[in-house]
Amino acid sequence: MKPLELLQELRRRDRVFPFIDEAPPPHPRLDTRHGPILYVEGITKSFDGFKALDDLTLYVGDGELRCLIGPNGAGKTTLMDVITGKTQPDTGHAWFGQRLNLLRMNEHDIAQAGIGRKFQKPTVYENLTVHENLELAMHAHRGLMTSLFWRLDGEQRDRVDEILELIGLKEEGHRAAGLLSHGQKQWLEVGSLLMQNPRLLLVDEPVAGMTPAETEATAELLVSLAGKHSVVVVEHDMEFVRSIARTVTVLHQGSVLAEGTMDQVQNDPKVREVYLGEEA
Ligand SMILES: Nc1ncnc2c1ncn2[C@@H]1O[C@H](COP(=O)(O)OP(=O)(O)OP(=O)(O)O)[C@@H](O)[C@H]1O
Image 1: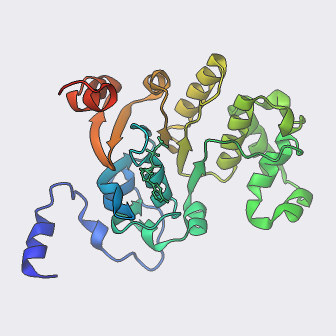
Image 2 (image 1 turned 180 degrees about the horizontal axis):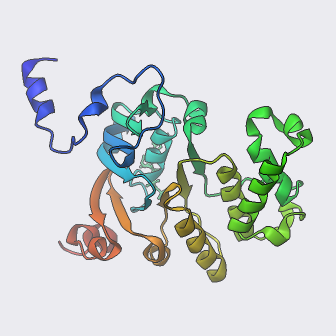
Image 3 (image 1 turned 30 degrees about the horizontal axis):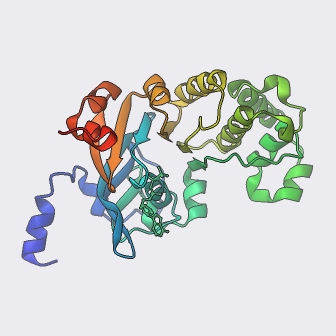
């Protein structure tokens, strides 16, 4: 690195964690001693010259429930794609804890390391029961047929029951997943992710298409996951975000526009201008 570049690099004020430039140790394990579970620094991703992410820096604390909002095209999905290894950025760093360099891992390894992603559209096995869906998720790495004939031990049965209770589907365990309501399918999918015990859950628009009662139950579920898991929720429904959010990050044109409590970001003139077209 040339002396000028080195000086510029050292002067970056958004660079808080110096270990980010270090090579990973030979046997990386998730390490959150410094607090954050997710470090995203200076990420840029262009598509045909258009910057979907533009020098984006974001940290998520271990056990935190973070909401990510922003107008259409702000870069939310692209950010999730980078974190989960679906998209390789042009520049920047992305670390899971302080030892796992996400940009050197593929999608499968990232999932194995403990990052689970829930897409907007629920993808459950409609012809299997709720219980079987969760069993399958527990043995996902074994393949469909092996998983279906795999006998659960007592501890694993307890785990399925625990998740059924958590996602509010205890009474539905023996129903075909295809018969569940839209909201219940979403919870089942969250439950399937939880069977793999992820440390970080990325959840895309969880309440789209839900009834008010389902939305409320989803808020309770996500809030109850925080602490044990870290959760990043991408959502357009502001009322829902307000009901669950501790810290909200607002993305705009591929960068962080504002971060703080819901009140802080809603009263931020920059945010108001972007959302409401108001003069700052
Ligand atoms: N594969 C791609 N090729 C070209 N452009 C892309 C690609 N993926 C994303 N973009 C563009 O990057 C920008 C950011 O898109 P992204 O989907 O990340 O935004 P978003 O915040 O998730 O939006 P929404 O809330 O509508 O889902 C958009 O202008 C989009 O058109």
